[in-house]
Image 1 (cartoon, helix red, strand yellow):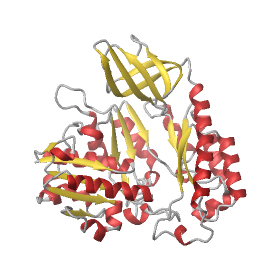
Image 2 (cartoon, helix red, strand yellow; image 1 turned 135 degrees about the vertical axis):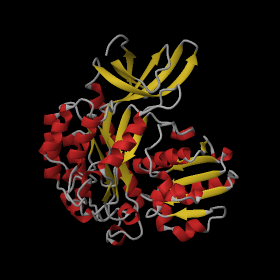
Image 3 (cartoon, helix red, strand yellow; image 1 turned 180 degrees about the horizontal axis):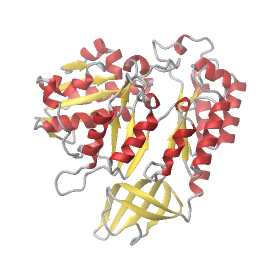
Amino acid sequence: MRIYLDSIGCRLNQSEIETYARQFRAADHTLVPSPNEADLVVINTCTVTNAADSDSRGKIRSAVRSGADQVIVTGCWSTLNQEIAEKIPGVNKVISNAEKTNLVPLALEIPAEDFDLEPVARELIPGARLRTRAFIKVQDGCDNRCTFCITTIARGPGKSRPIPEILADIRAALSSSGDLDTGAKEIVLTGVHLGSWGHDFQNPSNLFNLVRTILNETSVPRLRLSSLEPWDLDEQFFSLWDDPRLCRHLHLPLQSGSASVLRRMARNTTPESFAKLVSSARAACPEIAITTDLIAGFPGETDEEFLETIEYLQDLSFSGGHVFTYSERPGTAAAQMPGQVPFPLRKERNAELRKILAGSALQYQELFIDQILSVLWESVIEMNSESWNLSGLTDNYLRIHSQAPNNFWNQISPVLITGNGDHGLEGVIRTGQP
């Protein structure tokens, strides 16, 4: 059977899609690059914002129009809106988040025990899912109750995966199949609340121990951490950067620089403790990239509170980040709060925050001009028989563009950063260097 896989939203969804790809292949089915070629389409949905809801519904309808024999829907939007998803004409099955670990055996109507085996070697997912980095799910769910977050409702309580399962997935992702070097050069650890990994075990552990074990017991060239809540880290954690394979990048969601807004959000941090954490990280790893998330127009956000966030951002100088216009999610506490900010004002505040982040990101990028950085090439476009346009990421999450006489896809190269171009930093590959 020909299978097409697609997802909307977070890296955790992408990690799950990669797991389904390995399982379908283990059952001797073929992955295809478009729904038009598929007998079965699987869509992993998202509900983090109203836009994600809309994208999810659009992907489902597009899959139905493709003419596939079966369309299976899973993920956060369909879990919270199961009846609506089931009524979309052409949808054959809706599999909730609680069942999605067994999605492939449920889709194929075979025993789940058939997938209790060592994962097969990594093979690229055709089409839009083509990636050099492998996203490995180490944890799901969340026990926090941030007042704006619908994901904790959709995903349920936190649950960690055991180390042997994680190591098996990483080793499979690092391996190649066929003549093409498809083995991942970078592993990204993902979870809804990644920093809580191990807290739910009978003998509790923590993310520090997981990362140290992966570095000690695998040959991973690069290990990257996805989003981490600031209250999950301590001084000991920063010693992990003694191993150069751990990417110099922390994504720490701030959401607001105002103490009163953070309290309404039920965030377990304060502007003071967050700033102290950032200072400690930079002291331990001076060139580390620290990116963040912000919410513009949270309920009750006054002009004074918004100004506090602006001043806080200017002081901390993040190397980048994402700004989300507050989106009411039914079932969350924030949706019932008084003082809902008018939507046009939310958008204005979003634009102002994005401008500040763009400025500090540019300042961070310029620190690395005339330096040599290692770049993992993710995108290559052949211009002619003697020239390729390359795009890739450094370990500290800088997008680099270059030209080369060869196809360096999925390779890590030393690159001299020469300056800023129209689409980010530009550089020249330094051949003959490690």
